[in-house]
Amino acid sequence: MNDSTLCINDRQEPFSVSYICAIATAAGYGVEIHNTAINPDRKSIDLTITQYGMPDYSDLKIQAKCTYHHNPKDDYIPFVVNKKNYNDIRRNKNPHLLIVVNVPRSPEEWVIFNENNSTLSYNCYYYSLRGLDEVDTETKTLKIPLSNRFDTCKLNEIMNLLYDGKFIIYDNTIVNLPT
Image 1 (cartoon, rainbow, N blue to C red):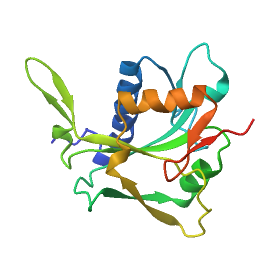
Image 2 (image 1 turned 45 degrees about the horizontal axis):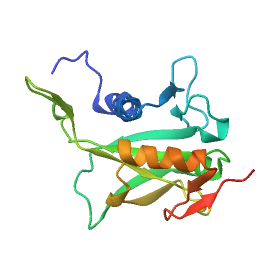
Image 3 (image 1 turned 90 degrees about the horizontal axis):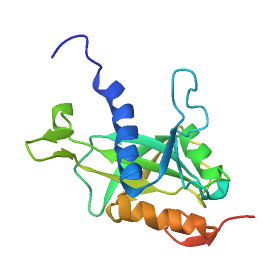
Image 4 (image 1 turned 30 degrees about the horizontal axis):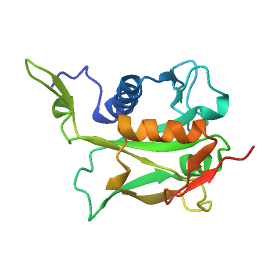
């Protein structure tokens, strides 16, 4: 490995944002990236997925994370989130999800190329913290269900809920958004 390349932690954030952008773009939505050198992530919002021509409440705020913990336990992936991100996402009045991109340990395996296509490895998962209690500890381990896979179909489902003034809470129950 060349010593001038980014360390794995510095690769994870842009990869997770790019992965989510690929899903949103493939599904036909706009994406606004918030975390840049001149606009650092201070509100636990890395990007916003938008439905153009729709009211602002139909925008989806995303906190993007990446992990190489690719050995799920039973039917979930454990993910440790820090107190600030957890509480920011939990109390945001706008629709806001944590999306965790699960990748192989080796960055060389994150994107697989062959002569017919390119494949992103492995999957990503969403988690709503809406409705959960605030945490006092420095970190919180979430159990993100494998059924919460984030793909174009799930994104369309979530965006349709937003269009109807609804959103999901931590247990995937659908609730009305406050007016």
